[in-house]
Image 1 (cartoon, rainbow, N blue to C red):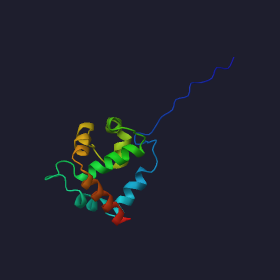
Image 2 (image 1 turned 180 degrees about the vertical axis):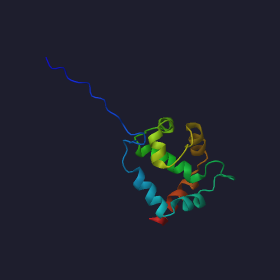
Image 3 (image 1 turned 60 degrees about the horizontal axis):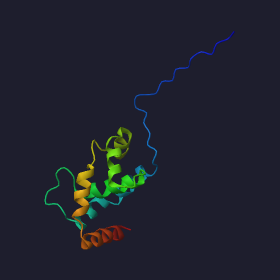
Image 4 (image 1 turned 120 degrees about the vertical axis):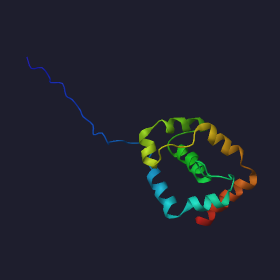
Length: 122
């Protein structure tokens, strides 16, 4: 009787993947268009940028949506995903409570300013 041999699979240490496509493209596009600078100028909500600036929060929320998150609570899933953090080039991202605090600082005027910054780049 021939017995099947057990197959062992090895994965490379550096091999990682994220299920959400488009993150790299969005980050590269924002870098080429210098979108971070325009966002920070448009919505000066913070006196100091320690450790995150306004663009960090905007991109964190946008990338959470692209990665399949429907709520701010899903940011915690992104914070625990090493492959995601490597894909966005971050050691850490703003946590859920920080994102919530950021959203509460927005007024209608701030939202219009942010939209105008995106529109001017476009």
